[in-house]
Length: 279
Image (cartoon, rainbow, N blue to C red; front, side, top):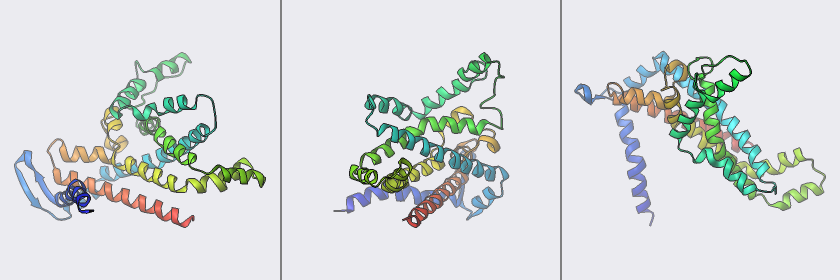
């Protein structure tokens, strides 16, 4: 009875993964007339010998290390507010979820307009208070933070909804028992809420870490195009540039994708290990 599901899983996951591994060990540039030849680990060695690629890895890790915790704490705070019996909770939940519903491309275009140097709303308000306009997507010192802010706005609703669903499943008897025992709000949060949300927290963080490493494409591509790589380049953009433009170096593009997958797997493994140690 499990065979049909295994067949589908093999077709849509294991075969593409195996093909990508095979491609990452090859040199193949069809647009240049270069046939597919196996080069072993040369693609990986060339990538890690490239200063720009190492900087792209640092950029991606920095993005993940900043955006994911901020999204988590904001999402948890909003979820706890929505968990209270406030009037119009359904309306607030819907409004706060809108950024997640918007297509990433549309969100990227919206933030590109907000960040525009001449006509952007943010710079307009800065000019009203006499502040200097800012090159939000061109200044190397702040461009990554501009990308992070746009991603936080887009993705925090996901964390909010999944944590809100987890809070709804916490038995009210636990809160009543903590109140009877004289626990403060902080003690109730630390000893009742967080332990009850542990499984949900791990799942939410795991999904966001994988997304931050593997799907950070739309917003970055629209805001900066990934240029320059040593400032705003991230792994998905670098894989696209290496593999599909300008010379279709498919082997190196596949190698970047495999390295991205390995980094994601390591970070998820670390998260799962830490979650087990806190039992």
